[in-house]
Amino acid sequence: MPKPEILQVGPYPDWDQVPLDQAYTMHRYFKMAAPASFLIECGRAIRGIATRGELGADRRMIDACPNLEIISVYGVGYDAVDLDACRERNVRVTNTPDVLTRDVADLGVAMMLCQARGMIGADAWVRGGDWAREGLYPLKRRVHEAKAGILGLGRIGREVARRLAGFDMEIAYSDIAPKDCTQDWAFIADPVELARHSDYLFVTLAASEETRQFVGREMIEAVGPEGMVINVSRASNIDEAALLDALE
Image (cartoon, rainbow, N blue to C red; front, side):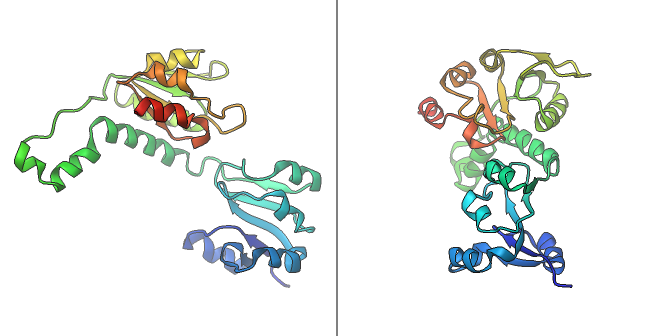
């Protein structure tokens, strides 16, 4: 029996690519010299699209595969997939929620520690020889017992908060409504007030049209020049112009 034919939009690590190649006929779209021509000539044979969150699948690609049954997203986000086109064609869309939840939370806490303790600057201080000319690296900010705000207490937000509790931080969060938390985490309904309350504001919102540029000028100003915004969500959730103005 011939293997199902899959359109692969972007590269995968070897530990995933090898079993995929064994089970399916994988057409590497990202390596094709003339991908549009391939879709015209061979789109009818494609039964599945394997893509990544940031690459997605647009209507043109979906329409070019009349026998398409499924789009599998390697990652959590599927906002780059044309869901309307999938609904019209009854094409299933799957993702991989929770596969990297704890890893993203780990990274968010690492970013806080790195920035608060000036680790990148310290590395440059040692490599550049400043330690020999100017002595000890300047003291930086402490993290323990500081105030942390979680903007969006979903899967990742909860994991971030759990990790911050290990630093005896005062944890508060903002969401559509209070969550059922066994931990003593304060609910602050107003996101701007949460920002004003926080030494470290973690942005863990899901990406959508409603959250686009959600962290805007007012919220960034509420964090203040001594506060820190740590975004482990999509970049679209941040008003980049307002952020650049604040940094300048």
